[in-house]
Image: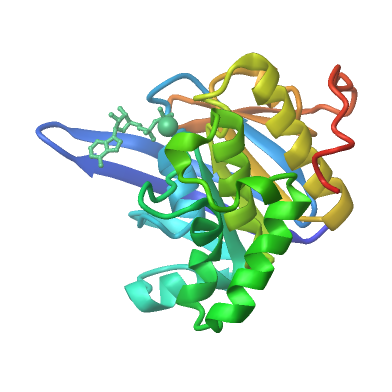
Length: 242
Ligand code: ADP
Ligand code: MG
């Protein structure tokens, strides 16, 4: 299988009051179409790793390749180009813009791509509809439940048709039932559209919904578990992707 996210001996140190060597030589291959979780305790460097994968942060040494392309010393402009072309992001805190409606939030990545107002509105409505949120299009984030907010964020991540989704604790702010629904939705996107998905989590229940669990500990990748017998969802998800 073709490795689409490739890390070789990647190191990262934060230079605060005390230097903190967070990633100490990470080697990792994530292949096209995989649904992977990166699991580790709080402070183990999961977000740091995901931010490097998403070109939101730099690394100090080693090599990171995204789709074969070496990612090193990119200008902010080039980094943004890669991100917009390849990657959708999902965050624990949703990162929706509070003074924009659901549909305006979903449209935003297309605005940055220079898509016309009419076309981006049409596409955003289509994605909201697919996620079962059409009737919430005109609502502001504070009028939505946590699960609805995360689905708006997922619609926003999907609208640029990314090959890769990077999710940092996507269920961290959700109750357990809604967490399962969000993970099932990601699974469905992976299976039906072949999107490569990397979920960072400190919860084994969340990691268990993915096909491969990569453990990070003391700045290094520990064991990697294949997880093909993860449990079926107790919740019907048929209505979510209409
Ligand atoms: P995780 O997501 O696994 O909880 P992080 O990658 O956020 O871990 O952080 C790893 C360690 O690096 C933590 O000890 C955190 O406090 C520290 N850290 C994270 N970001 C910064 C930063 N910008 N400057 C200094 N230290 C940081
Ligand atoms: Mg984190």
